[in-house]
Image (cartoon, rainbow, N blue to C red; front, side, top):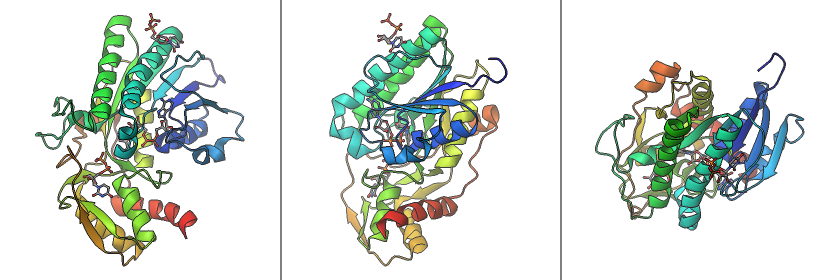
Length: 316
Ligand code: NAD
Ligand code: UDP
Ligand code: UDP
């Protein structure tokens, strides 16, 4: 690309939580950004601050249908990400992952664009290897309520690698672990947003199971930085690369931290654990450290403070 020519970047799922932060960051870096979203879980409010930018364009479109545009890079984030939303219409979830991937790969093939897939730690299922490394093949129930998401994402990874082998595409696969921050959907049922909203509304915090299951939570700015670095990496770096914060906490501990940081006196109540809910999850990020020089910088308390401040505004 010549000097002064702006890179044209497509972000699918650009009006969602991660997508809106990614669009913001790409515009700041001097790219022309095309945000494509069907607003299933995304919101125009997430991208309101970008609408006046002449280098930002929004298109309402469902990625299960073909898309003909001219672009240099594609970040494929379109897919409902929270259990409540991906189970709402499981067939559509799998279609979004699989047909969406085929369309974005077809688009990348025609335009010779680089294409990055937002994959997930869910490809490891309920893991027996801990922390999870990229070569671990996972333990996923193909028939359970999470399968539409997990297997859809696994098939998308397969498609990415087959398009590379068969058509020589430049691909990048990021396996994203639990990420949180401002602009999470307050009703999407994910644990960080649920606990913060419950604490601020002085409602009971709903811990599922005994709360001893673990997750590792990455602040959104760190995650976006990882995605940008992965896209900028040399063509022989395809991934998959784990991106997440390797500090593991129990769900019950997270509830305590959020109660403390919000100063809420809400009680904690225990509810049944959903089917196939992984017992433990934590990324091994050695590969990201080595090939991207990346690691998270924002610790849990700092990230939670920013997130609490975001949710406190419209709620109080
Ligand atoms: P999100 O629900 O906020 O964003 C997903 C976006 O995709 C939404 O704006 C939604 O409207 C859009 N979308 C859904 N189906 C679509 C379709 N068929 N066509 C066009 N747009 C569609 O979720 P998020 O947390 O921002 O997740 C973004 C991506 O990152 C997803 O692919 C998700 O699987 C992946 N991911 C997220 C996390 C996390 O912790 N946030 C973890 C692992 C993977
Ligand atoms: N596709 C698209 N935009 C493009 C090129 C292709 O959406 O610019 C879609 C097209 O609908 C096709 C899919 O991507 O079904 C896969 O494309 P590919 O070229 O791999 O397959 P083919 O067109 O041969 O089926
Ligand atoms: N969880 C919880 N209370 C809630 C929402 C979630 O205890 O109100 C638990 C959930 O059972 C899981 C963990 O928190 O063990 C993370 O859930 P989330 O839906 O955020 O992400 P995922 O299960 O996909 O990691």
